[in-house]
Figure 1 (cartoon, rainbow, N blue to C red):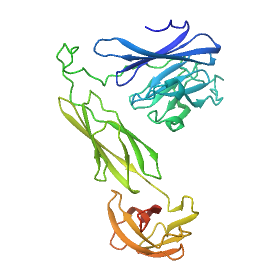
Figure 2: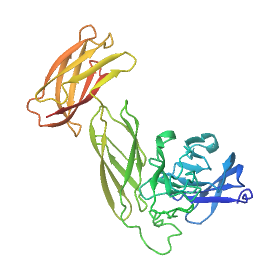
Figure 3: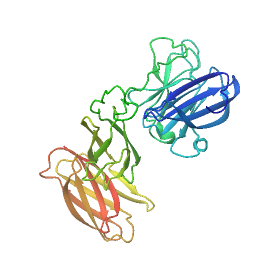
Length: 368
């Protein structure tokens, strides 16, 4: 279906959620036409429908490759010297093209082989591995492919193999979908096992404490329940949650299908330094000494002119407030002693907020 396929090298892949199929075709070496074709795929009928196709010109030698991110949102396409990311959640996929890596010139120190880009593969750990277009024994790694743009974190020649690779990469189908229980194509009557809950997350805005969560559950989950560790929850599959304050939060996902459910938990940390400027004001707030034994001093300079009173709140590693203390502000300055007596040794997080609730400083302090 669609336009005639270019003659040349290619790679193809199904998305982890089973809804899309994509392929990259490269016509010849040198300045070459790279054609990306993306189809909708019906797992029940096996039909490909409503394709999107576009081309771009880039250097090619020995072919390119592609792979989907774990959450099926991003498509990564490799040429000889470049790696690109496309956002499949946007109607005009071609317009979302971002270069997220350019070959850094590294050569195999023993065989003098280029470590450029070729075939790609999503691994079971959610990372994408990219083989070289030469016989070099290195793989490149995209560490967080669920994240948009350069935040996907490409590390070139990150993994050194024990032997020369001969331009190849393992091809592992995604086994986590399971049958479509109750559908017309579920003719064998083999029900899905209970899901195996899994998720990853990306801190999208450390200042606003905003986190994007990505479900990676195996075996056709049908519902999701997130507990964010601050009393809030969500039933979305890929929620974005904003925390009120710095701290350490235990996040749990319970994924369910017709057969059963499974729960997995992980920790989200907003770890900040003990001295942070107030954005746009030039102010500085810090707590010292750090580490401390029994008493610390909070010092604030150059606070916004409208701040007359403030409150410092101390949180434990689970994000629970263990101390609150009023802070007097005079002419944008504050100096306040804070007693840590009675608190066990460990790491604590402090936040200084104006009377209006606006955050004017945050940090971490260690009690010996």
